[in-house]
Length: 159
Image 1 (cartoon, rainbow, N blue to C red):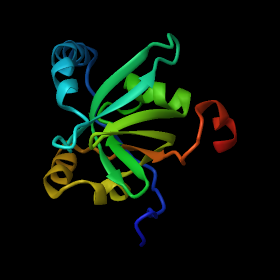
Image 2 (cartoon, rainbow, N blue to C red):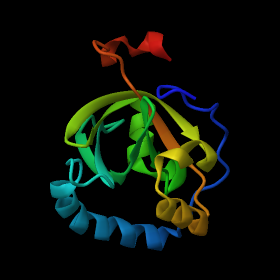
Image 3 (tube, one colour):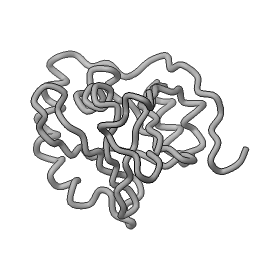
Image 4 (cartoon, helix red, strand yellow):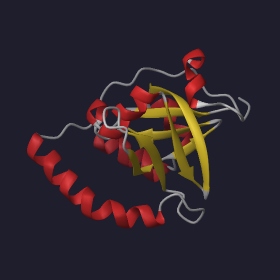
């Protein structure tokens, strides 16, 4: 397989589910921790965490969400820890694109696609793959890097 090619994606089977109470606690902790993580995420010296820049699907508000992510060929993959309920995921799905800050650079990404662990596995080191397996996490979001000159307002023809 050459550098720019990916294996055919397979459908994912599950994600971690939390009770509403646990999700409220996680949101509270994230509001405290995320501003600190955002100061470190996306830099060359922090390859574990990148920043996903997206817009609210209803509000249009700009968001920056720190996420574990890795490059994979001409794409980026990130675990969908909270499945389809994560606001960042729903925003990216609605828009069809986002900007990823990773390795000290911004990358426009588009064509969101859910893939399973087997498809995403080559992007992650062994210790993270083990953690994903222990957590039963098998859903990842794959976002392809947009070609040079691609514009979000022209994305209707890209889908």
